[in-house]
Amino acid sequence: MRPSDDDIMKLFFSLNRVEIYCGDERDLHFIPLVTRYRCLLFLEEKGIVFEYDIVKELMMRYSYLEEILKNLEEEGYIWSVPSPKDKTQRLVSLTDTGRALLQDYRIHQVQRHIDMLSFFSESEKEDIFETLSQIKEEREKTLLLSINAIDKKS
Image (cartoon, rainbow, N blue to C red; front, side, top):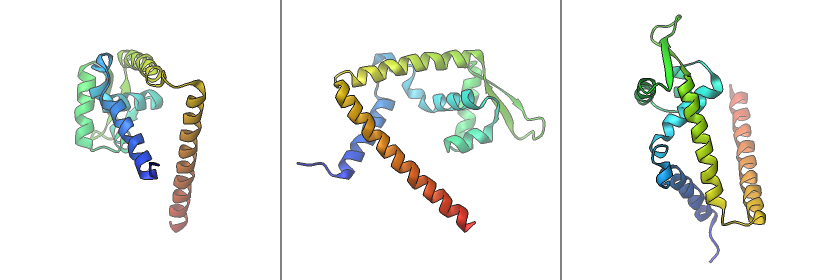
């Protein structure tokens, strides 16, 4: 039986959830903390940012982010200070310990990806990559068209 488009995409997103939440024993100290790593990765990319910038980027509630940042700071992965211009906002950045944690995460992630694809031939990997690249390209085109349509209405 040939799978429907819906079946294919449900399987793809299901696999993504499995990848995020159901790792092996090596993953125990990484997997429950996916949102924390997204925060750390954003901070690594942007440097010093306002908490609000993280809320916007990660599309999460401020109260949830506040708890995550509090824990990351207590563990020494980030530092934060009140904004000199707006005392209701805090500036946040990575510490060296946070950068080291991300380095460990990347090494671990690369090995997980190698393990996940180890049973595919090189040709099959190329096909998977090409297919996913096409999906990404089409989604980006659609997003760009949507943004342009919104801009024209404004």
